[in-house]
Amino acid sequence: MISNTLQTTVLHGNRSSQLCLGIEGPESGGQGLDSKVDGFKEMISRIKEAYPNASTFATTLREVVSANSHMWGAILHENDNWHVIKPREIGICDRIGGGDGFVGGMLYGLLKGWAPEKWAQFGWANGAFTATLLSDYSQPADEDQIWSIWEGNARVKR
Image (tube, rainbow, N blue to C red; front, side, top):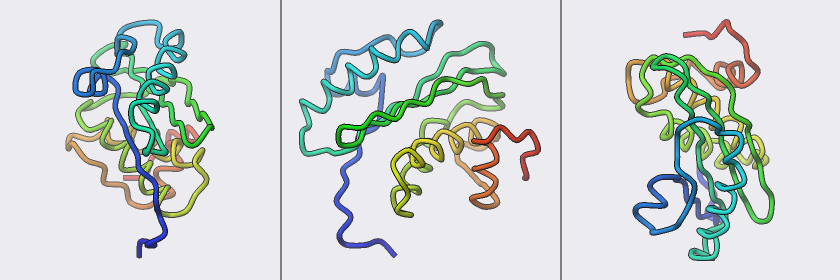
């Protein structure tokens, strides 16, 4: 059941923010992702100025190492707090749906009433999990499966 008191507006995107909203930001993808984190924070700050009624902003970070390996990270800004997940290498089966998986996991954590840092962590792990599937959407067995991915457990349950 969703509480009627939940009043959080979430904006997520990186390249889409730049193209659809006309917000300038760093080039997405490519090499040297760690060095672009500040550029993405600046982009989020510009989005926050353009959309002051939104309270939460997020973007995923992806560097393609190869077709089967990506560096995967995320940035979440809520109120005046930054939550940065430095890119970690993940195995890829099908990259389509990773960003949507991140948003789904992040919103799940928000609706569960978790601390914002946990929204970002769960979103990151759910996006990473989604990238290991042939489908474009997440199908975890339970929360524990997603948390085990966050913790780096190689024994992922399917």
